[in-house]
Every structure is written in C-alpha cells, then in structure tokens.
Image (cartoon, rainbow, N blue to C red):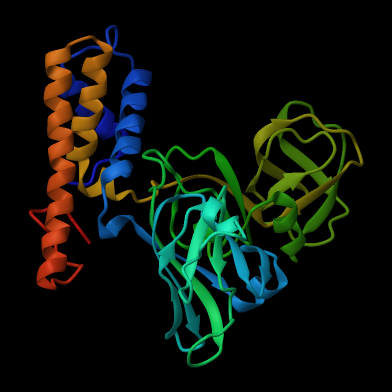
Length: 356
C-alpha cells in the first residue's frame, strides 16, 4: 500500500496511541528518519541497487566524475548516496565488460609502496569520498578498448518527504502539481506545453507583446483608459509597468480605449504599460518515489515505533517493535537470497512487498 509521507506519520501516531502533547509531530518525523537510516545499514535488496557510469572522456580529462587518472590508478568520485559497493567494472562501447576490479584492499596497504599487493589482480580501495582503482582505466584491458566504468552499488533512497524541484524539466516530465503550489512557472501565449523557470525567460520568448499609454490618471480602479496602442490587447494578457502592483491581467478588452483589469491600480498619465502573453501558475513537486515508504511501510512503521516508545521510556514496547523491525528486514533479505539461489526473476514480488 503506497502511503504519502503525511499518511505514514499518521500511521505511526495511531499505532503509538500517543497524542501530540506526549509525542510531537517533530518526534515522529525524527523517528521515521532514524528508522530509514537504520534500515539502510542492513537491508540489501535490488530496489536499493543503483548504477553510476563514468564515461571515457570524463575519466581521461579528470573533470566530472573523476578526480585523477594515470596508468597505475584511476580515481572516481563516489556517489553521494552510496552505502556499499557491489561491483566495479570497465565496459567497452558495446557494454561488454573488459575488466572487473574484484579485490578490495585496505587503503593503508593500497598506498604503501612496500606492501605486498594482490599481484596480477584488479583491486580497489576507498579514501574519503574517492574510489581508487588499480590498474588505471584502459590499461591492460582485455578485448575491445575501454569506454566507461560502471559502479554498481547499494544506495540510500531519497528522503521520505522528498519532492521534485519546481523546474521546467520536471514540469515537462509530469512531476509537478498546482495543488498547494507555491513556486511560480511562467507560460507564454496561454499554452502549458512549454514552460519557463523565470519571468524574464518567458517574456523574452513572448513575440506578441503590446504597449499602450495610460490616458489620464486612474485612481484605485480596475478601469484603465488607454491610447497609443502598438497592437491589439486581448483578454488574459498580463500587465506590467511603472505603478503596477501585483500581477494583474486583462479582464475585458472589448473597448481598446478603456479596458477592465483584474485588480485595481493607481497610475500616472502617459505611463507606458506592457501587455504580454505570459501567464503564471504556482506549482509544487510531487513526492519522489521511495521504495520503503511506497511498498514496505512496515519496515518504517516498526522502526519508528521502536524510536517513539524509547522516547516515552516504554522499554517493553520499544524492544517489541525493535524486534519486529529487525525481523522484517531479515525476511526481506532472506526472500532476496532465496530468489537469487533459485534463479528467480528480480521483478517478482514477494508477499506483496514489491521486491523489484
């Protein structure tokens, strides 16, 4: 059962049977965060697997994704969400492996020129936020020339309450909603097929702007007298200019010499107003998918309840839910191990837990 973050916090409160005077919302939110953090320490299932690819051009010039490269070693920057490395391999342009770095070495041994190394093997170590591979990328490669490095690893999932950023890219991908929206996106010519992240960008793309001069000095009124038009004003256009407050739009332009607008304004005679086809809508990002929250809420529920009961000093209940939390993770890990042993497809669901 997929839950929103709000529904998940409500579930924890209902199961704890504690009102907000005893356990605040902030405590429940912390408990959920701690439960997720603790789950990542031991949970090892396919939904936590992720792949980072480091392309040849970036590896050779030492820019994005790589900090150093020479014959004896290649250094690549570790992804920010990495928990544990599963495999590091080198691929050719067709995606076939040309090498696997299959030995992990203690960093002290790796950097000690006098230490006995794993002669003949491909080995790696981790130092701070860098993964160091030896031999270096493309050296002594078997088969076709090396084209990239692929890092397969277990990752931390996005935050339980993470939402997509309000950007043009996410708008076009369908990851935004206007419900509760607070961040503006701007649209040109009344269309929602192309969006712009700033008003300046939208206005720059607007080829249908019209200007006109205020004819007189209207005061606190929605009726604006105009003359000196550069084109035809139409309903829905946004209005800008000296003295304009807010983001008013044209409500009625049937009389081009005296239009009606959406909000009262006080303006000065001969002020130039600009009428544009730029429209504004406020958006908020939808929830970023999180496998634990969306398909395995029991892990988070039991882990959070263990934290909540520890907070209220109910040791018996805390221990009870801690055991349920540990058992739930063990069961998920066991199911994955059995599936691997039997050669099962990784897209099979186990007991409704969505282990994909």
